[in-house]
Length: 136
Image (cartoon, rainbow, N blue to C red; front, side):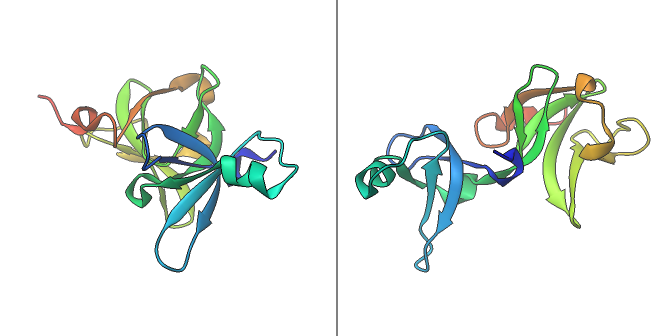
């Protein structure tokens, strides 16, 4: 399975994270169908489908950090000693420095240009907003 097609979001029923395939409905409701589930009947699909808080949905960047954790849009990573958040911008996955200081060459870098051994997911913007605060 190609990981870049996965999405992650927080379930409305219990607030837990769900990873899988995104399904958007015309009325604005969003669902994720759990990844890795054996679907044999429509009941199986129903059991693996969860309504998601649309504000928390983020796509997988198709990359893993040094511990093999998947990196998603909205994750906060330690990259080259700097706290950065992951976003999709102008057609590319980007790491953006939280404190405005240089990562390596600038305050933002293309995720594809970074070595996985220098990336570590430390949280996300939804569960760990305190990591987005700049400390002096």
